[in-house]
Amino acid sequence: MSANTLSLTLQIWRQEGPNTTGAFETHNVSGIPDDASFLEMLDVLNENLIEAGKIPIEFPHDCREGICGTCGVMINGRAHGQEKGTAVCQLHMRKFNDGDTIAIEPWRATAFPVIKDLVVDRSALDHIVASGGFVSAPTGTAADANDTPIPKEVADSAMDAAACIGCGACVAACPNSAGQLFTSAKLWHLNSLPQGQPERFRRTEAMVDTMESFFGSCTNHGECSEACPKEISLDFIAYMNRDYVKSKVFNRKLASQK
Amino acid sequence: MATPTISTRPSSPTPRPKKKELPYPLNIYQTAVGKKWVMAVTGIGLLGFVFAHMLGNLKIFIGEVEEDGVLVQDIDVYAEFLREIGEPLFPHGSVLWLMRLGLIAMFALHIHAAYTLNKLNNSSNVRYQQKTDWLASNFASRTMRYTGPIMLAYIIWHLADLTWGFTDALYSNDGAAGPATGEWHHGDVYANLHGSLGNPISAIIYIVANMALALHIFHGAWSMFQSLGINNPRYNAARRYFAAGFAGLIFVGNVSIVIATMADWV
Ligand code: HEM
Ligand code: FES
Image (cartoon, rainbow over all chains, first blue to last red; front, side, top):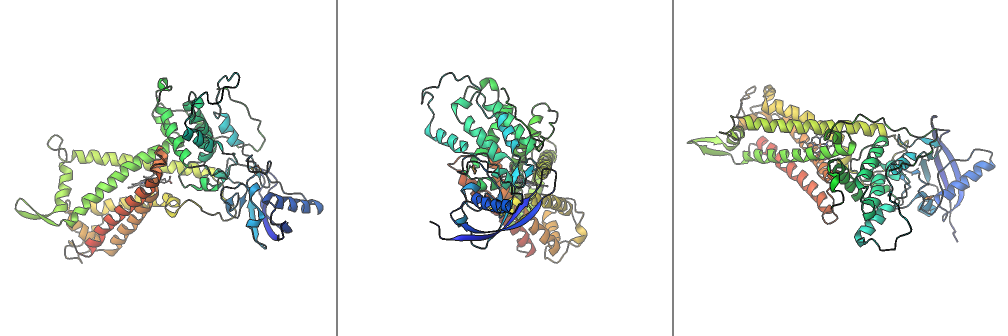
């Protein structure tokens, strides 16, 4: 097992609630095994705080296996920390050095108000999905697999988009706090497939309009894709832009035709 | 489509109020994605203008040509040609004015979209209290909101300097071809240019403005493909080369005119 342990200085954002101002608080932790995950390191800190009779730090987490999208904080200037394509829960302490100082801050955007400490309210993302991220077709019993032929490339592309776990790192990393990468991924995983066609244009308009009521506008920096734990591609943003303007112009009586 | 309801906590973000929808096609411009589309389309128009403008001005390298038995500067002939486009069907200078109106409209839309989107972005963003790293953006993409206004200020100077001749008190007759200070003449493109660039301050303004233009194009001519949804893995890499090449071409072409004029090579 791990032989190395780390001693660290943590500068952690503490904030009582959405309407109070927060500040960094410095904490020292030692004896952190280097095969602990970043969140386990925070667990150790919280246990120390509880034993000392202090209030533990609230941080977002759930599955801890990189699939739920609950975790997410800014670590030393990078969303989800320095490891590319990795959510905080999958970031391990062996990526840090003994004696490091680590700054930890919540996601920041007007649409992501801080609930407490490192936890922010990401319900704006839920509102985007609720406005069109579904297929409303009566499904009956399960259809046979491969009933609807889908080219392999299309299925792969839809799957790449569906890999989005909705953590909000794209918004957090964007200098404009734009929600383009998230929204375009949610759109593309339905808009690229045959089952998504009937509602394609209505969906695109509804989700983009909801996105714009909360978030900023894309200037094509590409920071989102770089921060994304699932490495969602910027290509989807282009597809979304194309579909959105098309949805405004297109004669929808022709919607069943290519 | 039935919309499921989501329970909201007191901290929930409030959506921006929706503006009254204008009739089609103006409603496209009311949205951020639509504005970005307009920015890209007007950006393409402006790229076309910048390219044609450079090509025309490179005529300064042709030097003197014979017209009706007299030697004249080819660039002065070209300046007169611009006013003659469309003749005799259209009156003298009218087509040039139509093109100018189109150009002004493109600038106005481009700048209005940039301004309003920038405002939206500022209201959406909250700054981090720690230094954040840039991983994918570049100097050009981060300075679009500065290179744009720098160019706007430059364009006004450029028109005052060579189109209207307001600044001819700054002209210098150092160069062999330079007219006397204060001697701007309508249509004397070659002489006016030498007069203006005889003053090193003016030359520096031209070179700095072209740096801003090259940076703006380096990001803009890539970004516009994404904004328009022009994306295909088969040629996506070429979009970056196109933008870099276009920016480089415009910079080298324009600055070569400034340097050659200053050095009296032309
Ligand atoms: C000859 C002059 C100009 C050319 C050739 C040009 C070209 C472009 C192009 C191609 C884009 C990309 C559009 C897109 O991403 O969809 C762009 C974006 C932009 N332009 Fe210009 N433009 C010019 C002048 C200006 C001026 C005068 C301003 C402001 C006063 C300006 C401000 C901006 C801004 C802020 C952006 C957005 C950058 C971003 O989204 O990252 N531009 N321009
Ligand atoms: S806790 Fe589920 S993705 Fe990190």
